[in-house]
Length: 152
Image (cartoon, rainbow, N blue to C red):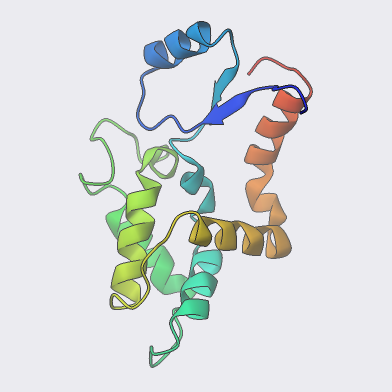
C-alpha cells in the first residue's frame, strides 16, 4: 500500500477553528477543500445540462445551459442552500451544492432524473475534464500543492 499523504474532506460548513482542531488532532493528515464541498467545483451549467440530458430522454426539448444558469442564479442565495452571511462573490463556493444539484436535477427533469452521488458528480467531472478542463484549475492547483508537500 502506498503511504497516506493526506485525507481530503469537504468543509461542510465547519468553522476555521473546527478545521484547525481537526487538522491538529489528525497530525496534519486531514486537509479540507477550499470550497464547501466537492460539488461546488461542478456548478458549470453546460456540464450539468449535458448530464441531465443524457439521463432524461422524455423531456420535449433538451435542457439548455441558460436554463441551468438562470436556475442556479435564482436559487444560489435562497436560505435553504446558503447561510445569510455569505457575500454574493463567495456564494457559489459556499452554497450547499449537493442539495442545489439535487433540487436542480429534480426540477429541470420534472422529477424524472434524481441526482445520485457519486454517479452524477463523476459524470459532470468527466464532462468538464473532456470539454473545459480549465474550469477545474483551482482544484487541480490545490491537489498539486498537496502532492508537492506544500502546506495549504
